Image (cartoon, rainbow, N blue to C red; front, side, top):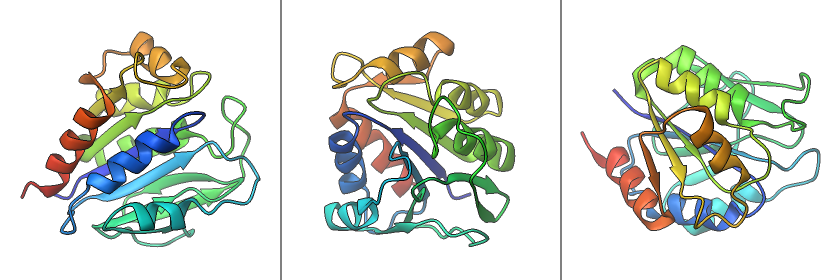
Length: 186
């Protein structure tokens, strides 16, 4: 079974996100899904992520079938959700004042893929990702949080820790290593 890795980042989350994506192996067997709180602003995040590592990154497209070894980024002003075998985009209501938001991605991934899902909350304000991590854990998935002492803005990691007990609270280097290992294992 290929892992489904979901990552949420906001203020201060770009550097940890680049470290994690940069650590993924060329033969990565996971599909990676990223939500960065960018609102409706133009974004070149897929280009930045593609340059930082060995995997191709692009904005997710509605109805596309996820492939292993690819990074899918929520496009500006769109929530990205997962159905079994499909990416879905919508402009539904903001969640925790954000669109795109992590909770819709995390929760839909948990419902579609259960124990295959890995959820990661990185630096950022507010509490987006907390409910989604709880859903991932409830469906048998694995949850990680950037250690609040390392997070540039610890609000999202602290909220995720308070809402549920993640499987690990790690510094960025340890987090990147753990995710790379999960994505490389047969």
